Length: 135
Image 1 (cartoon, one colour):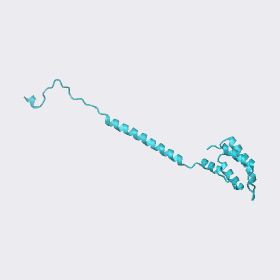
Image 2 (cartoon, rainbow, N blue to C red):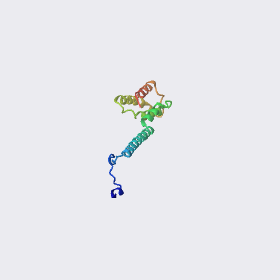
Image 3 (tube, rainbow, N blue to C red):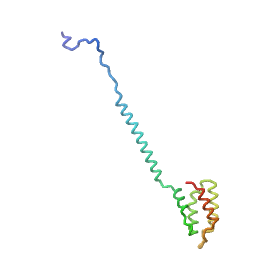
Image 4 (cartoon, one colour):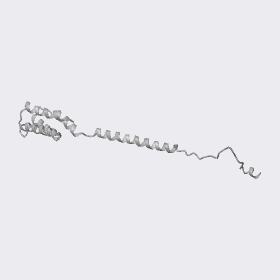
């Protein structure tokens, strides 16, 4: 009777409890961490892309200024073309040669008080140089 009092009745067809290992919390933490890393990485790349897009591009600005030179004042135009064209002269050997040829033609419009209008041959050299440029 003492055995019955302590609730130690032998059970025959029932197996003892088995410990079940639960990993779903670890899976949730791992997936959350992985998704967070991917989202933060994408946000960082988007930020860097936006910063590079917004950054000042000297070549693009000089090309735009070179295309918009006012040829009514030949002296001022010669100086501006020389200044803005220097950005592109080192792109290739062909660019360098075209720039030097253009400078030779523009030389007659610099360093003088009164200068004539730009002649057709000089304009052709300027257009040739502008045509070589790719930004």
